[in-house]
Image (tube, rainbow over all chains, first blue to last red; front, side, top):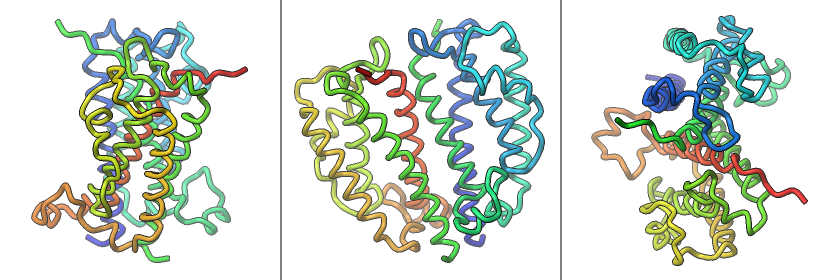
Length: 163
Length: 163
């Protein structure tokens, strides 16, 4: 394993840990609990679930690795805060969406050669990248893992229902 | 800049971003607000502030780079949840503690040669590390950055007082 491959392994392990943790946290809730707010007047669990899935759907485009499958969800889950919007997909639809987004990302990630991770992402110009090659695809992935952790911390404030 | 240096730069930037963000979030609160719970019945802001500072004080030892300056705080901030404990240091003391811990870490980090970041940390045996060299000091730092983000997500639920 060369050094680039080692770094990529570290970055992917870091990402996969957060995604696995998010799935464990969300999957512990009953369907009814998904509609609970994480704190009085704050986002509901279902909103944060859709928010993460939509953001990761967009991640394919940020990384320049594919097209978002459901950009119509940006409006509800990325551009607006939770407002009990009736236009949100059902929980079942969101669960399928979450699964397909993360399965697709996983497929893209495991097949991406290590050298590709160190190329620039689509939110950067060539000139910016030349000035700072540390801002590459892998650094975006590190950033997104922090973002997942940020919301797990919030969702974890709600204790799953135990019968 | 060689590849190891590049990856260290990415890891440190990722860590520094989260610490800077945490400081911005905490410093926006009045002293009185530090005693607010992030949600009903949950940890208070001051507890999470001390929790992060104490965990990062311990990080020096986990990385094998130094000794914790205040291990006596582990009991209040790492081994126990927030319980309004009277033995907690004052907010002023905690602010000094936060500053000194992060200043010391920063000093250690900027002076650590890139190759050192890819050595094993103290929570691992030599044998485990030989089997998986991706679990090194830098991977611990990535993990701790996620942990900071996790708690920022919670503290951000409290809106700072605006006069």
